Image (cartoon, rainbow, N blue to C red; front, side, top):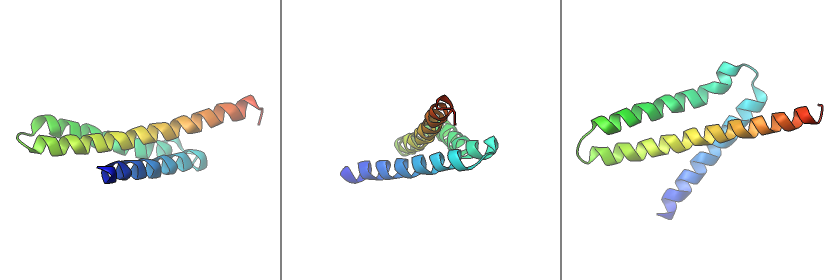
Length: 94
């Protein structure tokens, strides 16, 4: 069980760092939104497959859906970090 938690934490940390760097370094909005859009599409697709599957496959697809949703949450957290930094920077007049 601790390995699973470690797996989630490492993956979320990597996505959070990557999304934050993308938000700070890339100007076009479409490129900044790409990771969140891809992960959102994957999460939605896995959710649909979870509800259409039967038997024990539901458990596997549900776990994959939770995994994709946590990565999507990490993207959202990266956007939040970027937004807070932007507000602080504007309030200081830089």
